[in-house]
Length: 263
Image (cartoon, rainbow, N blue to C red; front, side, top):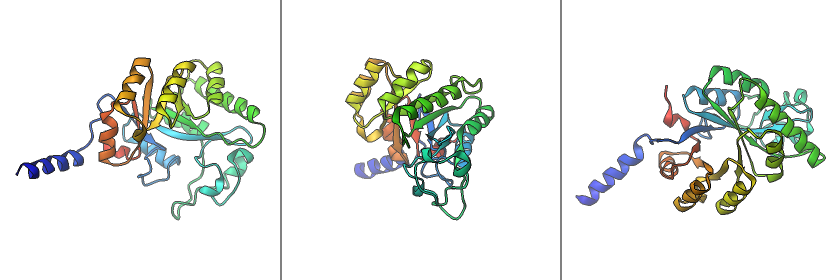
């Protein structure tokens, strides 16, 4: 009886809606990998925010003519009928390269400067996490300069001021962005928690972004001691959400944000 009772409680625990507590729920790519629309699409981002969650995470790249767009992969052929780096094509040419890899419906690549302005006005309390994906087509430092200029200009917009966060794996990019806009919250995207915490502390960043499976309670305590925030990702079902939320991160990029719908 005891064993059966325990299993019933475990099953009940796994089926209930996870309690986020003080953790901000961020839609990974909008509705997450479990959503009905492709991540980073206009539909996924808008419908993610419509759930009433704290914000959305967006992969951002830069076109050849300096337009910020939402795209994850290193090569366009990963999701579109086109090929090459995003940074090698103009915005006008990219508009002819919709995402056709996830079903019959084509999803145009999103131009972020215009969409962010639209979403910021529609959801005045939402935050926007920009995951900078750096795939340069040409001189590296010129590319970083231009990319950071674009993000700094975005953050200066009245409707976006104080509502953007940037995460990236490349320290050079974060340092350059930090010099240009000291008020923009920056997170080091890392696979090594101990090293990531040390480097974030040395660089004066806001914190780290890391897969939930790579961090434990002791490392979370260390982050708190250093005054650093922690963003976790890699949660797609109730069990993984409960495990991640049990660590009490500041933010959780969820692949199933519908679990936390306020609508």
